[in-house]
Each structure stands twice: as structure tokens, then as C-alpha cells.
Amino acid sequence: MGKNRQHRFEMLSWAVRLENRSLWSENADQGNTVYGESLRKFSGIEYRRWDPSRSKLGAAIMRTRRDRSYLLPDPGSTVLYLGAGHGTSISHLHDHICGARNDLGGRIVAVDLAPRCLRDLTHLASLRPGLVPVLGDARKHNAWGVLLPRKVKWLFQDVAQSGQVEIFINACRRFLQINGIGLLSLKAASERWTGEGEDVLFEKVAEQLSETGFIVEESIKLTGYEDNHVLFVARRVE
Image 1: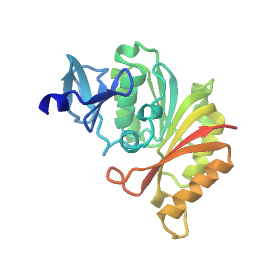
Image 2 (image 1 turned 90 degrees about the vertical axis):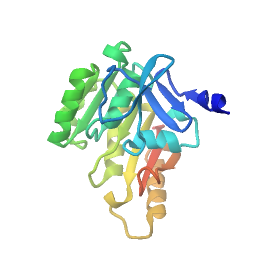
Image 3 (image 1 turned 120 degrees about the vertical axis):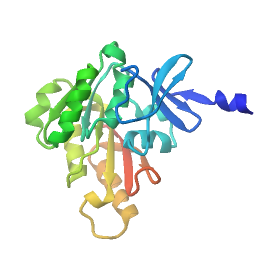
Image 4 (image 1 turned 135 degrees about the vertical axis):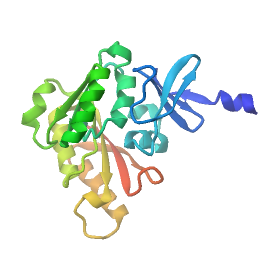
């Protein structure tokens, strides 16, 4: 039994590994951690534990009922991340999209409104080529949109501003390709609602996305990792 348990793993991408019930990404900055996460070697390769309780993307990967790899962008691609925070999720995305020394040629445009977050992101970018930190408002595309001259196939949003759904829709219209995947992390308390209950709110958000050019492929409840949160997986179709 012990031997079977040891080998119960799944590669979600070249760099992202699910080992039993733990998520790991191959460390693009060997020997170093970003937020105090565990390091471990599998077959002689160093991985960092991707803590889903500190990463809504990681939580969604663990909670999805679909193919987990569907939530990840293509390695070597350019992506937009709105609400980058201190770089926890972004560091694991970098492992997957860019690899060590950005050998894959990927690019992560990471936008956040908080100067303290930008300081952390700037430090992270000095160690991880391909990460582009931006101090900016997710609503004000003209201030930083020049960094994305072409539309992307993958966009993630986790902003702590009211009107998150409108911000997401507008950003996708500007930056996301048709058939591209947009991931919206939504906290119930951050939205204006009438008290009918969280489930009603999340259903209305799904309806709003469906009415504005998206197919909502999944609504992932992050309960247990991030309570009162749902991550919407939306494919842009118009």
C-alpha cells in the first residue's frame, strides 16, 4: 500500500504536479521559496508546494470537477493577471508559464493597485524573468494597456474593488481573445447585493456573464480554502 500511495500522482502540465492531495510546481528559482512554502524533490527535480489556502487559482485547481489542467494557461504564453497581490499565485504561474530563466519565453503582466504589493512583485520579477509588475487600476486600461498590444488567451481577475463583474467583462472585451478563458474570483461581500443569499448572488453573476458574451463553463466554490468565494471559468464567445 505504501508503494502505491507514493506513486499516486498526476502531471497537470510539464511543471505542475498533483501528488496525492497536494499541488506542486517545478521551482523556476531553485533553492528559494516565495512565501515560506515547502520545497520537495520528485525524481531529483525541485518543486514548491502550491498552497491552495493562499492561492485562489490553486484552490480552484483542487476544487474543479473538470480537467484540472484546463485552468492553466499555455506554457510560454502571455497572460494578464488583475489583482496580483503579493505574488503567491503568480509565482506558481511563473513556474508553469516561464520556467527557469524564462526559457519558455512566457510573460505575465501583473496589475495591482497597492504600492506594497508592487514592491513585492518587483522583487519577485528581479528573480523571475518574464514577470511584468504594473502599479495600476484594473479599470483604467489606457494607463497600462500598451503592455498588451495583442489579445491574450488567458486572463485572471482577483481584485478587491466593487463592481468586480463589470471590471472583468470590460477587461475581457479589451484584452481576451475570442475563445480565450477568463477566470473571475468573486467574493460575495465585495459585491453590491440585496441579501437574498450568496447562492442567488453567484447565480446572477453567472447569468450576467452569459448575457454579455461568455459561456460559463464552471462555477467553482472555494469553500474550505476561501469561504464565500466562487471562481467562474468563462470562455469568451463574442
